[in-house]
Length: 560
Image 1 (cartoon, rainbow, N blue to C red):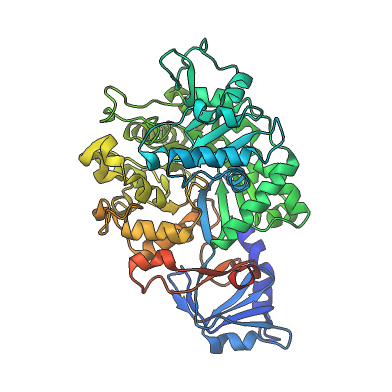
Image 2 (cartoon, helix red, strand yellow; image 1 turned 135 degrees about the vertical axis):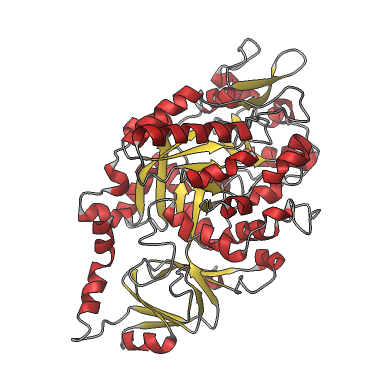
């Protein structure tokens, strides 16, 4: 840790130590601005000097003038609001990029529109080309699940596998089911479900391990397609002010991103994960102890060392694991995707390798079980700076809220889901359980660490929308103007910390990003308004004007 910190700012510190000889000159000075730094020692500033990819100094415009030379580029921000580059702590990068390149179903609000979009998109493809992603939401047209019969006549020559928006249910057409060998004779799978028609034939809807069997039949992405997906995703993320992401895909992002980095094409900072059950493929040195200056430089842009697992699925697909049954499905409590003892074995082994562990848990039973495993691991492996994470942590039993801070578990949460699920969640789990659903304020009150993300492409990768959701909790149907479960609202600054400083902490990067201060990377965003001074509902209308990474402008709304 110390060596890395010294390396990141050694040149600047050397120059500052030599101030008696000559004041170092900045490459860029951002002036006439209103900077929210996420640094409690200097919460606000009005100018910032940048040398190379690093902040040389930050403070008043008068103070920054001493770093100006004839060669310095001076950027007049015209009083705009500047914040640290937003860090999205949970994205599916390749899936997101592919979704932008595929048929878009997220806002298809009728059965007819759903079918029309698939038919039109498939008509642009060559025979045999797969139709993937989609991210549909059946609640928008009344809750009827789609079937293969809806789309088969339009997709005879193209296998189709389309995710429900939460990623825990897919619709497959007949061509895809045939390739995967899923038919009337296929047994119902443990930790999975094949929805069937009255004659026992697969309807096309697959959950859990049945979904995994289908996904395993899809040909691997080519390196060319991965590159295209990453670049497409990057443009979208930068337009939303996202400068770093924690990528929880298991589709091989790292190798493709490494090639982009080596070719000077990587334009966003990545922290990539591998599946928890493949922990033995990850070297611990790639997380905290890079061995060379080259590794240190690359780790500014691209690093790994995170392993991600699953306890359960999602609320909308009825695959999240609860202690009590869903209200609309008698006796159905969801299910575990992995066995508890397997999770323990994998987590313990990964922890012994000093890998960072994060696990998806949504239902209250899944959350309690994962906290039990984490408690056991800490007791057996000893205390250290392990920064255990839980992805989603959506429906927490009241007694488990304090355990996050007790065991140092980072709640990696996605606020947009709250204003989306809030339209219908009470119908599934009732008025009592929703009181600690997306319990951001309760977690903060117990001193837990919140790191914000989007779960893109399940939800938009918009930090401003995430902040809006956490602050207002206004559901997307506008039926909760004072907020859904309003007692769980948090402040704008609490939400901003979760998308900057806390998200950096969640990847062991708090010494070089997540806040704006001398010696840190010059990743920042210029917004159209100061979101700390406007009313919460207006936050969703604020625009990202420019995005800078390492002092270089990577997005400019005026040039789009």
